[in-house]
Amino acid sequence: MKKQTQAIRIQAKRSHNREHSVPLYLTSSFTFEDSEQGRAIFAEEIPGNIYSRYQNPNVDEFVEKMCMLENAEAGLAFSTGMAAIFSSIAGLLKQGDHVVASNALFGSAIQILTKITAKWGIECTFVDGHDIKAWEAAIKDNTKFFFCESPSNPGLDLIDIAELAALKQGKDIILAVDNCFATPILQTPLDLGADLVIHSATKYIDGQGRVLGGVVCGKAEYITEIRFFARHTGPSLSPFNAWVLSKSLELLDLRMQKHSENAMALAEALQGHPAIEAVKYPFLVSHPQFELAKKQMKYGGGILTLDIKGGFAQVQKLSQLLQIVSISPNLGDTRTILTHPASTTHSKLSVEDRAAVGITDGLVRVAVGLEAIEDLKEDFLNALNQL
Image (cartoon, rainbow, N blue to C red):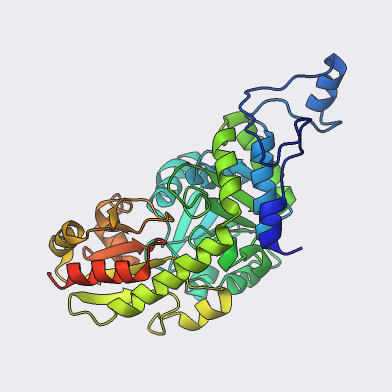
């Protein structure tokens, strides 16, 4: 059965009411037939629901779909994408362990690795993500974890996941890939040799800017360890959000095709505009890793970046001139969104660290939505022509 069909047809078990659409299980806890059943479920001798912090039918359905899409053995859902990242690191690592991470990570992920886990004696070395020799040189005897995004947020740098996976062969290193920008529709990192794949489900998985969520999928042995950490620290996904996210997966394939089609068309339309220093999009021939993008991804995704001449002053003017584009730190919505990373999502990084990953004062991230492409072209060109 094709994945698109499974994304629609995988459902929690029907109740006696014979519902066609899965109901919401808005309950904090579950009952037992008797004390013996409760004992057996707690002892994990038999399966069963206990408490929605541990599991819930809506959450289980969402996780099952995500594991199917990512070709994963197991998975776990979280309240946010950052909770998923933090729980993966905290659940799998201990004092004295070493992480090698791409320097092109979402700002909050960098804060976790430099300000939070560092206090627990977990060391991190940041490297130029697409330089495989830098990854190799950073490996120490106590290196236990590789972490990267591909494409990266916001610079759209790509990492050869298969090449990075080959580097850890024979070593006790876990490779985790943030697949938020690509989604499992465009690439499946586990098939390229990754051990874990992480999503902020808030973005494309939801697709309409409604709810928060996160998910980790991958090898069962690692998910088991992360589940222990999460079960006792409580970063659980709400049943309502899980219900929304599971429903959203039914259209993820169609949405990602259209996001990618619109983004490609907009990138092509804006290339060479005199107000723009550079347009970056994975499937543009001008992208420095175009060949890798074509090899590793099905489509180019819904994100492009524009480096606006004149820096923040001109970005500010552009944001005021755009008529139908939203100004927001989010992405993955049906509505096109413009973000200025240097002053928002990556503002806590030093100027030097931002420069190292291509975040200039003039860089804007455009999360291209599902509007009619002619309207988007017209809106951007009208605004840019006035700069």
